[in-house]
Length: 259
Image 1 (cartoon, rainbow, N blue to C red):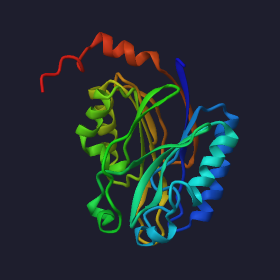
Image 2: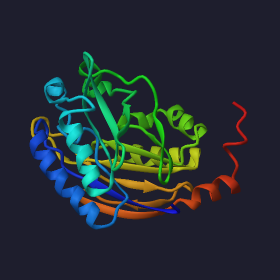
Image 3: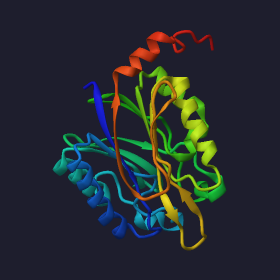
């Protein structure tokens, strides 16, 4: 596979309303399939938003509940699906981005390592224990979630592990748009990989938090392959996977590291 058709599902997540969000996501996946996308990426906690206090009630384990329904949807539509959800695991509840494969079902799960203290995420949820990079049809792929973007060592580890594409579901609010943009470009340039970030949009009714969208794909040169505005919608872009090897050959920074 030398090109990859990516669908970015920038949606307004209804806080604490998993049934409404699931109905919306099914429609979005159908649209992505109709457009010939190889993958669709959803925002962080697309199932219920920042309803941390209800996380245990909403969460399901990887083999059941909403996870099983998304896995079935991936099979039915022959499409990879990414985006984080509430996961119940043992006595804990996690912010988890599962790898939904059309053939293998749940082929991996990344649990958010860096929980966001400003929203008290760390008070309600459990932090993950390790990064996740998996081999997919387009190449090795790593994962982060939202606040993880501020921690460059995670993304460098993915580059050392051979990752060519990194997927980041997110819920970044105003006024931190320029932080988000700058950090995404930096991670792409530093690690000479594609960064695929899908950020939610809309406003939470209870506290008025406004999410700025601007889902985007940054290429290994640090150039913007696609960046959208704040409007809800499904956006698609085709990326050139051969560019990764080209950039790494022309500027062998990953090979030249001393520390």
